[in-house]
Length: 452
Ligand code: SAH
Ligand code: F3S
Image 1 (cartoon, rainbow, N blue to C red):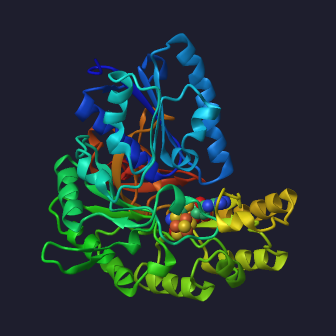
Image 2 (tube, protein in one colour):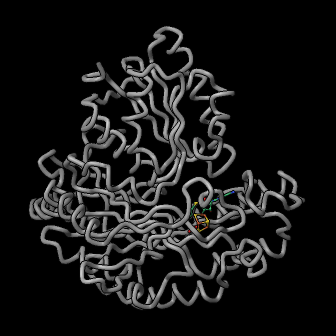
Image 3 (cartoon, rainbow, N blue to C red):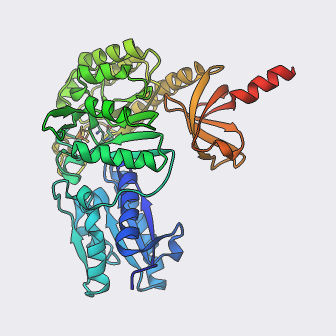
């Protein structure tokens, strides 16, 4: 009865959610023989993979469910499932606010979804809820991806045990759990066989990764990078996200590995030691600077990006200025920045939020202005340079253009025939804009020069 039924997945939030949604699609196709559709109107089942990192993200969930309710009125057998961090945080409360929801599952129970769907369809259950955190069981039950693509993501660990005072992740995704080393290598092999040339290792804190290999020897995150870089066919490795506390010297030294891409996203949140300690980030500004100094010794032009929170409860003008000074000194190539958003149950949410929204907005604007300038000057340095780009596909905005990413993770657009998709090509950068770079395939540039 479920075979050939169509499902539609909408994903909100981070790369981990994108990854989970892909695996969700795999498991529904593999276990239930359902088919994926890009059109929600055409679907027999709608799945929403949610994010609760900030209040705004969470509100989006209920807006979306409101829109899907209308589809269910037209098609009463339509199934609606809500997964991800809001599902984990709110559980059955979602059903009280949106009674049209049939299934609620958490980030660690996506592999149990086929059973939950069968219970609704065959056993006529009214509602299925499973938001448990079964230890890593998820990966033992998920089929490997069968999609072929030049770039792929690989989850190496789940959850987070850092408990930064503002963050909801340890409560919604659970504590840090590492996947088995051999399982990761096996999945990396399988992705490479499917055509992946670049793999991004994913996790909330990938550099906290620790495990044992098949000889029961301890292996670290840098060991994992090194092992993967030796697999035949792999050309580039990225990782996201890392944490300053676990940024050990062996990981810094691993940046000599030429397969490791030239970008580093290392969230810092604030440039004030006082605020960092109140956030329980467990490191100082100086420790962060030292990591960057050492990494830049090996990779002077690394694309360094970070995350910042402005308006943390009690953040003074002086402490905010310390953040601006810190940004000025470190010179980031880009950053995500957010106004602090109190999350239910987190320690910071019990603190008095004494900063006006007006001040928070002004601080955010100042910080973003500074980052924008740094970002543009980093990109400008790429003008007239040669970049090795892995071509990912046809540009969504302009169909006659292809796009890909350079080693330092910048999106590069260029004109060329589709035969380049999935290949590495050398691109000469001809134009730099704030969020995009344009270039020409070196071969074409050479030919033009020869004609002139
Ligand atoms: N694991 C990562 C980040 C996870 S969340 C780390 O090591 O920090 C992604 C980013 O969202 C965070 O870095 C932080 O800047 C932001 N964020 C998390 N909780 C937030 C909150 N309550 N309010 C505003 N921003 C928040
Ligand atoms: Fe969140 Fe801090 Fe972990 S920001 S994901 S608790 S490192």
